[in-house]
Structure formats: C-alpha cells, structure tokens
Length: 592
Image 1 (cartoon, rainbow, N blue to C red):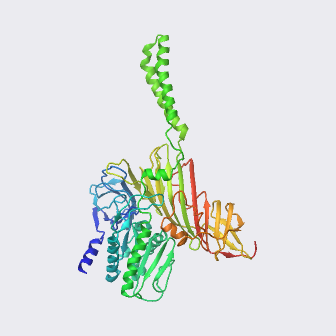
Image 2 (tube, rainbow, N blue to C red; image 1 turned 135 degrees about the vertical axis):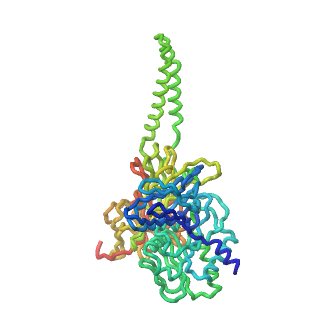
Image 3 (tube, rainbow, N blue to C red; image 1 turned 90 degrees about the vertical axis):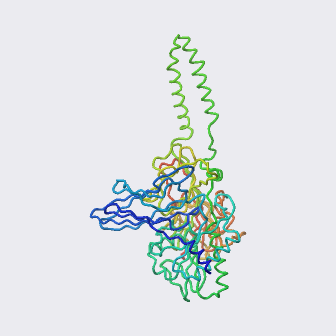
C-alpha cells in the first residue's frame, strides 16, 4: 500500500505558479496542470491583479526564447484587460506542438515590455508527448484512487496504450505509459473544453458537482460531447444529482452525452466487482481517448488527403521557358548585336533579358495557379437537435500560392491539431505562432507559400440548425430543411426504425416527403456514434453509405458546412464534403 501511494504521489501534478510584480500589476502563471499528449492542449492558469487606479492591458508571451528546429510552436501570446483595482483569472491553452525554448514568460504592460520574466514550467505536446491520460479530482476517496492506480498499472503492464491510429491513416507503433493526474480543486479547473483534451477520462466526486462553477461545468460538458468520459464517484444510492443539462441516472451505470458518456460509480458493487469495473473502465476510456492517437506526417496527410488534385511542378513548361531564354539570350542576342555592330550592348541586354525571364517565370506560376488560396474540408458532424448541440470532426487542408498575411483564425471552441510529426531530430520544419486574445489567431508559420498544410479540426458548439422531421398519417415521413445548406442523399430512420431516403437534392427551406428505403443489410456495433468515437472512418469514406442510421437518427450529405469556419478569407475554391449524423425528436402532423 505504501508503494502504491508513493506511485500515486509521483503521478500527481501540482500546478505551482511563477509570480512577478510590476509596479501595481502582479502576474501569476501556473505550471502546466496536465499531461502533454499527442492531440491535447496544455493549459496554464493565469491570474492578474491590478492594484493601481488605472486600467491596464497586459500581454503575456511564451516562451521567452525559441530555439527553433523542425515543426514547433515558436510563441503563444494573449492580451488581457485588467480594470483598476481588479483581478482577472484566465488561461493559456497551448496546441499540441513541441515547444523548444526557455520556460520564461515575457510580460508587456500597455505595450511596454517588462525587464523581468515570469518563470514557468512548460510541457511539450506533439511527437514526444504521452497518450491521453486520466484526470482525477482530489475529492475522490483514497480507495477509489487506489483502484484506479492499480487498474492503470495492470493496463500498462499488459501492453499499455497503442500508439497507432489516426482517422485519416495510421502512424507508428509501440506502447506508452498512461499518465494519471490528480487535479487542483475543481473551482480552478479549465473553463474551456480544450483544457481537457489531453485526457481520455475525468473522475470527480459527487460533492464536486455542486461546487464546480458553471464555466467549469460547461467546459467539462463540451469535452464530454466531443467524446470524453466523465465518471462521478458517489457513496449514496438513488438518483444522481447533476448540473443542469447533464444526463441523470439512478444507481451505477452509464448515460450517453454527445459522442461521450457519463458513468456513475456507486456503493452497490462488491469490492471484487468494483476492482473489475475499474479495470474494464480504464481499458474502455483509453480505447476511445487514444483511438486517433498520433497525427500524421505532412507527407502522409497530403498523400491521403490532397488539397489540390494533380498538384505537380510544371516541369515541361519551365523547361520550355528555359530553352527559349537560352536561345534568345545566346545565339539570337549575339547574332543581332554582331549584325548591328553593337556587341558592347551585351553588358545590358543580358541582365535585362535575365530580368524579363525571371518575371516570366513568376507570371507563369501565377497564371497556372492564381494568387488566391484553396481549401478542402472533409468532416462528420454529430448534430443533436434535441439539445441543440453540434460536434464536428474532420480534416482541413490549405494550399496558397502566396503566404497568407493574416494567418488563420478559429474560435476557441475548435481544437486544431496540425498534421506534422517529426520523424527524426534533423527534420526540416518551421516555427508557428498563436495569439489567443480573440479566439485562436494562428498568426505565422501555419500556411506557407506553395506547401500544402493540413489540420485536424474538432469543434463543439451550440446550433439551432435542424432537419425538421414530421410523422405523417399512415407511417410516412416529411422533412423540412432547416440546415441552411442544400442536402444530398438523405437517409433517415423513423423512431420505430423504418428506413426512408431522399436520393435527390433538398434545397434550404424546402419540404419533401421521403420514400421508403430497403431494410438495412448491415449492422454497426454501437451505431454511428461509436464509429465516430473510435474514429472508424477514413478520409476517403466519411459518408456511411454502407451503414444505415439507427432509429430516430438520419445521415445527410452536404457540400457546405455552417459548423466549422473557413479559417482563411479570400478562398478561390473550397471543396467541402460533410456528412451530418443527426438525432431528432419528430413532430406529428395531420397531413402530407
């Protein structure tokens, strides 16, 4: 037991804070309060106190010095406004990229850089990170924590977490030890779901439910919607109290929420069953949390998900231009000058010809590709119309003839995972910068000229968009398109499981009566939700054509998406292939 508690203590992360005072302003930045994982953000809590009588704008940038080399996060910054005599509590959320540099944070107040930096202990995400871990509240009793630790050790001893996967391909192999983290008091937990993306499961005590602020409850709920598993440990029987909007259950068991679920561990199970349940839950949580573990390399991403079809260097055209230039600047130029007895003019005709040729090469490139960027998106959206929530998982690719001056922009509701994996220490790559003052502004290094860039995006947001479903007398189904985009190839299952389909196009706002569809010939264990949680889909097959929907759901293909932002203005072309998996509550009508 002593050794077990020692191991537990070693796995505990306490987010101590580095603090510096700059006149009337005090800045405290916590160390990373969770593991750095392949696909999870790393969170640093920030507390700013202004004891002066004037409002201040405080900018924090990490790291102070970046040592570069390969694909890495060069800097992350955020500007805060602190009222006179006020205190601001916020956080910095580092995307899953390696951070190579000093751990100090640079502070600027009202645009003036301060001399002293704030010491911060940082963790590096990306290639060398750990798989998704387990987050456990401090209020969870010692017996349950010991069971979790023992189950985790048994899992790691049996082979650990596979370092394979990826919704758009696969990468690597081997196993990794799963980190288990004891968190700070729940009042200090992240208010953004991105702060929990480094964990496959979160365990809280029953008392935490009444103590957690609404902002923390919202962050945990969004994380659960995106596939996270929340476990509530309770020592009482009967109905389990939950924050508003969360599923409820009586006794031990599970309840679905979006792509994730909530589990209750009550006192009903005997000790042996409880130990077995903990081990089974560890395996289940990690299987889902690490389903799409590692990102792809840039080459793998472009090979499996090309942004521009047939993108090649125009070798034939360039060779032809070079031959024309050689003939004109050589024999033709010399012959004409000799004929006119002006050979001295070679001193300026050759440089001028070279300049004209260079301009011609640049013009040829622009004429063949244009100057505007292009994008491609392939994604699946789980739209729960009963709760008005949408979860979108997909791949986004960009190709720009010129480097975008303003970078990319995404809201803080979107997880951005760049598809870059270092294969060796000498890999080429570039630094990337992020500013989180207003959303996620990916300022530099994310899209370079004439180099395809790929991002895996996961977005969790509220949505009132819907496909209104009406049950008609006689068992028919009529639908009204309230999704705001045209729908192609709709497949719908009635609440009783009867299959209906629409093979044409349903325009926005249009109403259509669906035709009966053949009975399903295939079965998917757990349905489409389970497919999404386990990433059982690939870039070339996101439509679920071979898997009919379950009762009370539908599958629709659309060529536009209102659920994820473009990220880049001025796109000349954006190829979009999105599948919507919808859950609906039907209305009953009186006619067709």
